[in-house]
Length: 454
Length: 91
Ligand code: SF4
Ligand code: SF4
Image 1: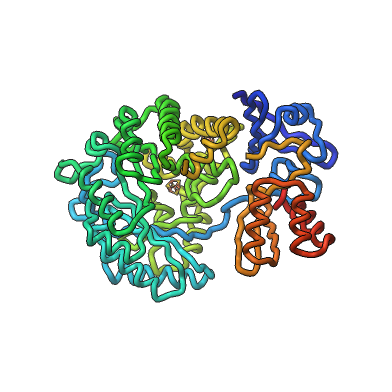
Image 2: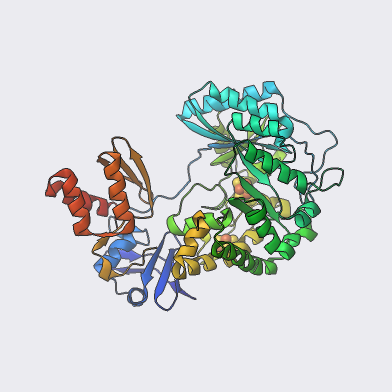
């Protein structure tokens, strides 16, 4: 697949915008650098475009897709620029019964946790916020530490919202080791949606996610998953941190998820570096072969008729197909603060769960409206909200979706959230072209990667 | 995935840049690139039939025939297709 750059040009009242084309023998996939919109065209149509010959029909669809504009036509609406947080993380506790090798959080001798009164106050504040802004639905993720250490607080959040007419999506990401049959039933009763943190087959998982005392946790996680199924959970997802250990065992990891644990939805996140875990992180040069191997494993599942969706791939395919703005981190760059806020054990409000450091505190619960807190921090030029330095991105076709990657990852890595996130960059540079190729040459596999099914 | 060529301009499809809402009393389509909204008062069964046809792709005549069948009048049916094309709901 060849990459061809198409520079902007004007023909009378038509302006064709800057784009990049990925070209096969008979098709070309166009990506607008300005708006992240795409269009697949035939090769003759591309040749016309390269020679600045544009049929009326082609001009019409280019304008419809935001790849061109005609005098007086509307420009695509930039996405997600509004401060409108609807996803809130509540940090119930700093305590955890595991001690993962890559954890961002420093183990604390006395781990603080929230109280029932505090949860009531936070929920009152969130309910008043919804009422002020006319929001009829809200998402809350209870997290920590291990959120199930504070199960009664999770139930309390549900209870607070049950007395309102706000539709609450309540989720947790848990290590699943505390999910007994009765915990699973209580979670189901409180309509809690679940993501299970699991790093793969026993060999990989136990090397990275031991209990605090050092003993392995995989068997307990599997039990927790089984208990969830018994309680009626069918479609929970899983979250995996990919390290160098994962690279060596990727086929077993995917087989474990697909065939042993029967997980319908998985999310494999590349480990981000902190000073405590650098030896576990993938080198940037290893990322392209990781992407190839992951796609290879998913193809094997597809060919064997096993339905499994890897969410980082599905999200990026969705970006290419219809530029949705649902994802906070990688549909249109980082939207911490704009679409998500995190509330800490200290009552502090932070732009996202990974940015809960004192200098990024936007205010405290009860000190004003959430949107005003964010606006004030932007006006005060808080470091987290400073523009990214994207000079090196040049004519990168993935700029609209990536926008430099995760600010917090860079904060942890080098103390500068405005620098380009090299891990995210390497992942996008490796994955997106492969996805474009799959979309053009094997749309049925592309559909599987996005939606599962066989 | 649709591969566009000027030669197939006669066939109509629903733009992928849309968000669809089928309600008991009608169909609402938001065109997400330009934030344009298209609405049609119709029962859910008709919404489904129309969306099905447009997702698969159909000739303008086929879409027109379905709309005329529902609206019992050619002029508003043609106007609807033209408007939906102009606002990028159909392409
Ligand atoms: S800082 Fe990172 S994790 Fe937080 S919202 Fe931004 S991209 Fe997401
Ligand atoms: S960080 Fe990398 S992938 Fe992201 S926009 Fe910049 S060059 Fe592209």
